[in-house]
View (tube, rainbow, N blue to C red):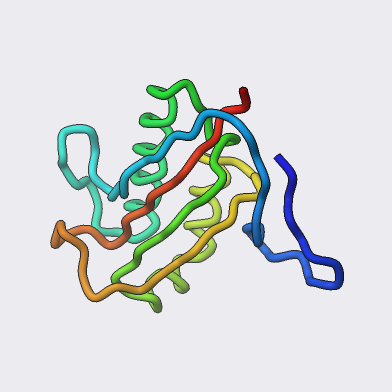
Length: 130
């Protein structure tokens, strides 16, 4: 994986502006903070993030990938202020479940998600080297 950082640009904190990769692509649908049986165990924002990330890792594993293969991540949050307030706990969950990788990320505040209790939905693209 080649991290793309144009000359003179500051290094982003917690993500990458872009990466270049080759290999087999895996697309993971938006994962929310419920378990494999569609049950929520918390309404805590960071807790739902942790579960969504664990769901992503499970889907990646099924495709022969690991978090290090993630090349794009999009977060949909229903409350920007709640997302920002939970930053420390979200960062800890991210490091523990995903790790410390250069992943291009986008975060978007939306008015609602399809599951009323969901506070975050995360989708990813991964590329397993050939």
